[in-house]
Image (tube, rainbow, N blue to C red; front, side, top):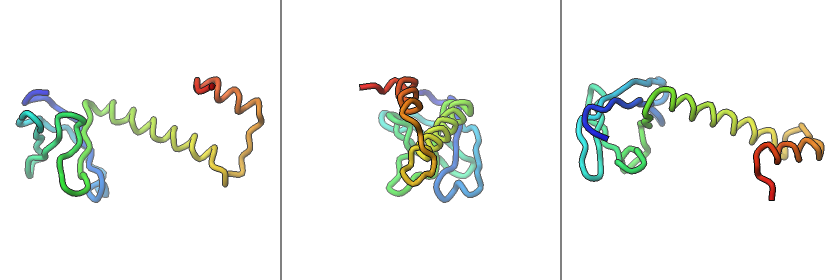
Length: 110
């Protein structure tokens, strides 16, 4: 991480209502934090983990590229689909053979 790097920013939490995403430049890098700018002010992030440094709920998530963000979103949608398929309140039932194939395909056999 160095000053001048470009990262993809996604507004989350209360700011997510507008659904804004944009690229932002790293303006400062310190020992523990780095800073991005969003036209109004600098936003502080931890170097390890890239989480926003705040006392409250975070307002921004950052990714290396928009493609990385879209990949995370696609994985989230697939996990949500899998989770809802195995929800005990779901009316869908699986046969033993279907469950065995799913376990084998996921590589989670014991």
